Length: 638
Image (cartoon, rainbow, N blue to C red):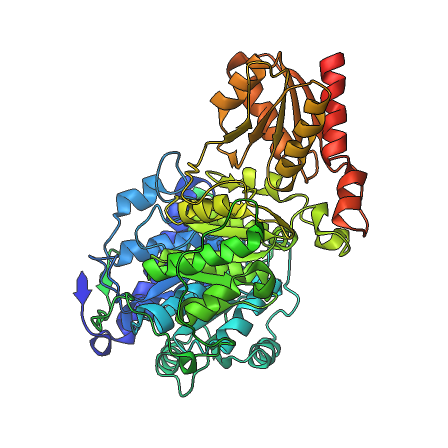
């Protein structure tokens, strides 16, 4: 039986059959796979059945349509429900559901990913689907200017995640009335009851305190759910809506309803047969709800009117691309801001986000020049990265910046961005002990290791303004997660305007046939390496100096050639902990493919820093020119 009709013509009797089918197929698919979460899927089946048949405006034959609504399963472990829904609308077959779920090499993975064209973002790490949905809703309201809605199904367990409340706070701040959150309040988490159980009124008070409109319903009363979704689709004001649905885990199968023993467990075959029988047997309904209506806009000219949304900046005329005189001291963070302004002027798909430090990261320059494409996330770094992920899912190129140290808070979101295949440009400023008197809480000393470990990532660390501009522009077209590390202090421009900095390359700043040691640096330590080379030259020791601005991918060929030319002697200096940063990248490169590790001195921040001047702290850490020269002498003299 196939039904494709406007919402008003699909009756709730048919919706009830769809809900039963979703439950049956959730049981069948997880039992067939031998793993999965049938009971978590069964509790939300009524919510999904009403949504997909009567409210979700989606052209299932054109998942890329700019007018489609967006459905995000934040409780990603309930993937049997989502995949059963995809069968119910006719985009996957029963055979794929039964034989492709959780199987090696198949697209119906244990938790949803964009391997499926109807999935915007990867979910499964709880507390992330809603924050990602905020990013998609931001795009819909302010950039795409399409009337699509964003529907997010959350589990009640993930309502304990702080990221959920960051998301609701920002959704209210940006007046995202196009965002609806359905919370499946089934009372039970993985190991037992959730902290609030079925106290839906407590959830409602919290949601309202964060600026959302809260609606409380019986999640198994189809009429009540339908009325709540209708109200959410026609909001009386500019607030997001949170529908708190009181449900029963395992609903529809009396042997497991409200049981604490069946989380994440498929039913054995005999038990699955009883469940299917109690639920009325296997069905093969195909039902599609309302289709979307496009407005004809595509986001190419997003609104720049500051009165259209809450912003804290006023527009100015974008400046011409910055050019820097060689030798002039310029912070790389300032060059990043200059480069971003120029990128935004050329490409209307470039957007920027920051975590309330834009006057330090210099993202504020973009905010002034292109206020319609700047989103202030305040001190909510998880939400910042999640919003960037959502914006990327809508085809925008987000640049998100904060202090390098604070990106550690958002690491799980960065990791999941890679799972989503998102193209994100992340920028961490104020890195290392070089920042000086602020002390260790502000010093990014783990960021290179963190970002190198992300699948498919690119990690860049410019040493001057010219290279910063070039690498910022390069990031705008890189696939996956890219990271740019910038420096607080002013350092002399080393390269002339127009110098090329290919990703995966490096620069040899000093070289001769008499070189006996290689000095490798990036960012602040490159300047220390140059100074150390001068000190060594005064003693008759010739040093080759390499600017390793591309940490991942690294320039294997240049490093290997330099080590070969300098007798295997190499000094690597980095303003970072010794684990996982530049030194590790150089070591990994030099031992790859069976090459023998050279004589190497690795200078890094090995103690816990305190406050002090940049000069004092670089000397304390042993990564200034004097220490680099001393390490080189030791290698040369043996």
